[in-house]
Image 1 (cartoon, rainbow, N blue to C red):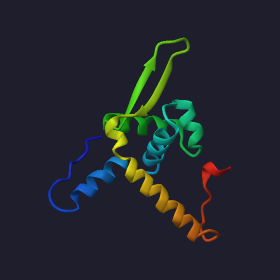
Image 2 (image 1 turned 90 degrees about the horizontal axis):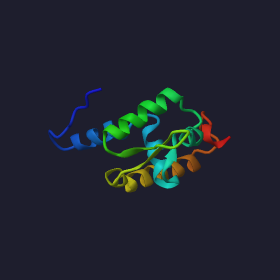
Image 3 (image 1 turned 60 degrees about the horizontal axis):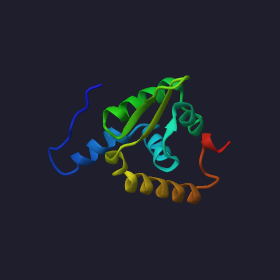
Image 4 (image 1 turned 180 degrees about the vertical axis):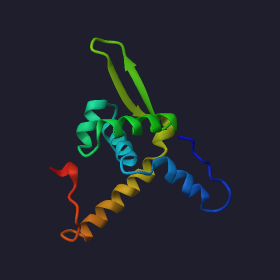
Amino acid sequence: MTRKIYNCEKGCSVESTLQIISGRWKSVILYHLMYDGESRYNQLQKFIPGITRRMLSLQLKDLENDGLIYRKVINEKPLMVIYGMTNYGNSLNPIIDMLYNWGEDFNHKNAGKLEEECLACY
């Protein structure tokens, strides 16, 4: 997928950022790689129980292509692939922290009123 770079006027940079980290899973993947460290594919899938294998693969490829994460192949038997954050990806730490903190506050304020349950909470 070709991505647009928005640099036309105020607010466009926000649109560019959201295009890179938006979607249901990318920011969650980034969160786990930031705070749980390097992870294998199966570990990431366990951290995010609602994601399909295909979607996880697509999201990891997008994040790798955008330079936010790296993919390291370890030539052992069996072959091992590890994902982790790049330095550039780690520059998103304050943003992911703010998203986490805002979401925690929202969930506490709206406890009992929310329709969906957290898939990772079971």
